[in-house]
Image 1 (cartoon, one colour):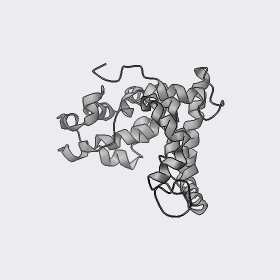
Image 2 (image 1 turned 90 degrees about the horizontal axis):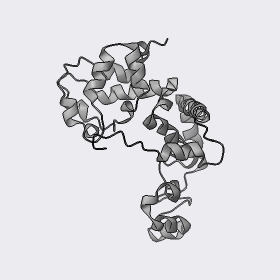
Image 3 (image 1 turned 90 degrees about the vertical axis):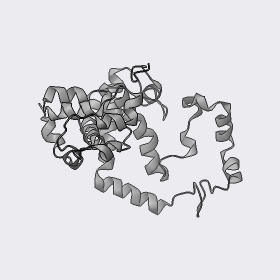
Image 4 (image 1 turned 45 degrees about the vertical axis):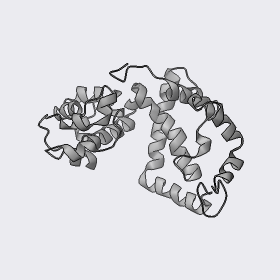
Length: 237
């Protein structure tokens, strides 16, 4: 069995984020996520400090580690200098490396982030661009967004953007040289390999759930993880 504590301690974010928790709860008081989710950063720090392998495995497979918004408000308030948000970063990475992220509803959404945001960075140079907002996945936008997508060049020209065109300006086309350099950065830093890890574990989970990942960009598994909400994540639900 993997020694999860030993793996976590290799991560500089874990080393810097966990000093010595006195269980005061100040991180919970300042945490925006704690207001909206069944989330308690203090309990996560407490669980990790116990160094119980089985408990940490449950945490790595849970929704809990995906609730943090990474605002790092916890860092500004902890009297011992802990940063629960950095501990969360280390837990998330380990969960992804081991494939445990596929065991929770929120964790499975890493596949959607990889497919939508991650691949968009490499293909266009942007984290977000208008064509990412698929009308079928964002019904809250109403019919207006369908119209925008259908008339996208004219719309952004009227707004003064240089949409998908060479040169300067908002939403300009990123040069092939810049995209190649970006791809090399991902290659050297292990980003591409990490993307593949997320893809491989997600495809395995999709097969277990009898969902297809090969029927186009908006495949069955992507739509499932993107739209599923069990309604169990907030204390108000």
